[in-house]
Length: 129
Image 1 (cartoon, rainbow, N blue to C red):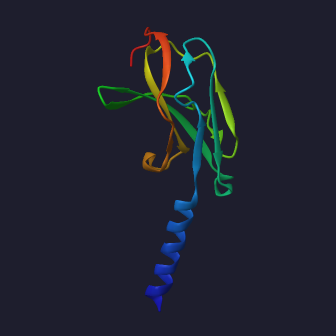
Image 2 (image 1 turned 90 degrees about the vertical axis):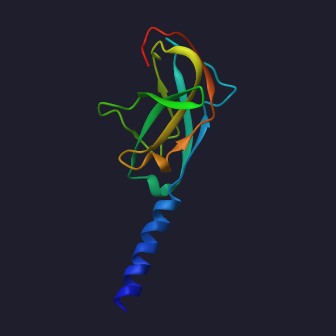
């Protein structure tokens, strides 16, 4: 009896973890971000994320290798996961290339985060990656 109660509790915990979802809407391939301008991230999320705060990361892909570039929500600037958009400005001057956004609840595994498609970023590259 104890085993089945523990199994049910574990399954309920796993189910609640799996059901938490963020879907990134923007930026996507048709979006271009420019250094010095504003970058908008839009998303939708499930209600079970109401008490969570999310972080937003900028990634780049060079030679099929994904590299972390920046945490836009560092230093206590986390965003409630149930918000639907955030503007980041001015965007730092990273090298031009293909970038993407990774977003998810702070402190959780990045394996559970949502990822945008790649989008172009235009900059002169004065900030090292």
